[in-house]
Amino acid sequence: MQRRTLLTSLMFLPLTPAAAGSGTALDAWQQWAERFVTPEGRVVDDGQGGISHSEGQGYGLVLAQAFGDRDRFRRIEDWTREHLAIRQDALMAWKWHPDHGVEDWHNATDGDLFRAWALLRAARDSGWDDREETLTAITRDLLALGLASDPRAEGEPLITPGAEALRSPERLLVNPSYVMSRALRELGDHAKEPRLVRAADHGETLLRDLAAGGFLPDWIEITRQGIVAPGAHDFRSGYDALRIPLYLVWSGQAGHPAVAAALRGFDSAATPDHLAVVLDPSGQVLAESDLPGYRAVRDLAAGSEIRTEPGDMARQPYYPATLQMLAMVAQRESSPTRRQL
Image (cartoon, rainbow, N blue to C red):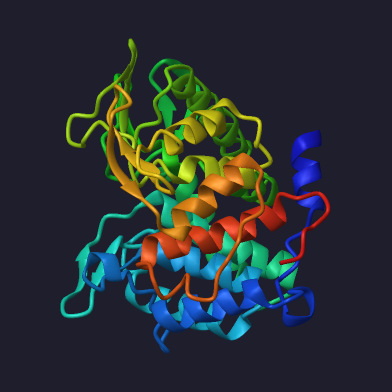
């Protein structure tokens, strides 16, 4: 409880112009929002054919709150409510196409988690519109549909990829990068739901187990006998797993062994000034990149200052650009001195 109290006490001060110092971070937010957020509030993933997805809407909401952009926050939430909140529960459909509308009604739990966390932050830290009813409904359905018991440890909850994802007492599909323990803890504390807090704690235990093997995969299946390769996904450490150190540092866990494992992976690239971004289980590098968004996550994990150049948002697609924005916010919010950007 002491650790959670400390994290909550480091309140999320929005990055308003007055708090932004030189304006570099605020300028980056404006560039990100102008490029990837439509006037209606749809967050566009240009790396996947211009679709929108629940993850992007959740990220957009958190970023808008962090940068004090109430108008964009409202528009992103309104678009999300109108176009993705079409399920019978309070969770979002995952995928929306500009030509066809919803193309996949299944939810992705990380998007729902970030949306709920953004609504909590907006009310608690920014004093914006009270959407407690929506927050309560999402939290309720995350508890009911977004958690499942670890087959190795009965009663220990883990966040699942989706309400309809593979789960049984004998086998559970897990995306380790969905473990955003700060969001889980704060939602759990707000709703007085200890299972969400426990899912954060046990999720960090799972990441510690993976780090002990030196490999942070995008997807795994967990059985009663242990962790195995997923049946329907590639067994590799790739673009999903890049978020593991980002979320751990943001959650006050910079010393977690998975952060060190991620750093070793990043730094295994053979090409100068590049980072390894996809690896196989043996550690062989399958893809490298010099994009600043991936560099920002690496610098955050290493405890180095994240540098942002004026052209960063223009020269990379949605995903690395978004990681860079999230890493800047994470660095500020994980610092006890409330570093101003």
